[in-house]
Length: 301
Image (cartoon, rainbow, N blue to C red):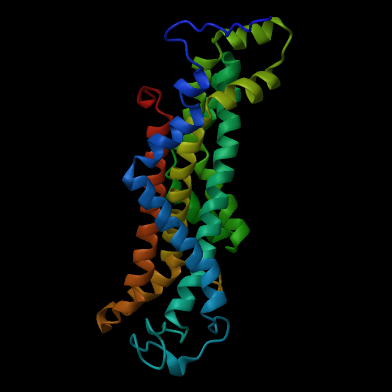
């Protein structure tokens, strides 16, 4: 008669999958434990739904102007939040403007983060004169105020959605480049990078297989802040009159137009777009703070 002997497990050496949650699960736990971060996610989802799903439910005319309906107060003629100075329904205009602001902010923030990450990783990994030359370019660009560059370029080139994305990304990549460069200076001396070199691996493999993946926490956190800054840049340029030509709109151009009628008491031209800008920027900042805590090693018990 055969007997089956059960494997003996030493005390304190239970299955790691059961004793210790996975890295992703621990990261998610820390993130969901941050109430402000969850609030930011909810606010962002609501703004996305309002901007992209709202027009499917609340259909308004947002192309042709009707000056006879201009500056109507909230609640009049079926306009819940009134109308703009050109006769557009305010709610419908907020939806259209939200699409422009969010698309430019997301695209510019992602593009700036992508380029800055690669630039900083290459600079930090190779070091030496390559790092010195690349960082001097970054330092020179940082010495020039970003708003000055944006205003000059936007004044020379006719603003469009693609143009705004490119010029905002062109000044926003400097911050992620310096952050990732600092991470690369530390990571290039790790054992696994040295082993890869000894096995004949090249610089491209080191940058994209080891440096960038191991700096992904810093990259993701910085990306949320870059998107928030890009949305603010769009609003700044629109407030200065360098926005996308009508009938397109963004929250900054709506705020700029409303300021003209401040003395007339048309508060509904100012508060809705202003509140929308504050909400979306705060949401991305809250999410960034939550992600920073989630990727912080010291918080992973």
